[in-house]
Length: 86
Image (tube, rainbow, N blue to C red; front, side):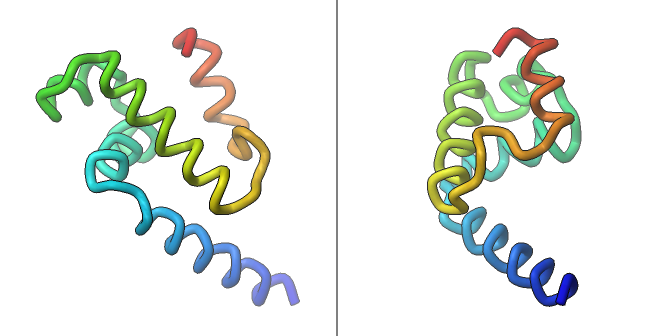
């Protein structure tokens, strides 16, 4: 039963990510998967740091709405946000 739930969760996440804009996806990949800081992602995307923060915020809000999950289900993300003062 756990594998079935994990597969459903995975499919829901993929579907939710596919509903993000391309810029939102790229910011999340840079920030959360590759672990780049805001300034690095901003430089790579040709955006300001504030624009990257806004894109990340909107992307995470969108995922939260679509998935119906708490604000930050990933403990590491909570720690990262506190350290960066976001």
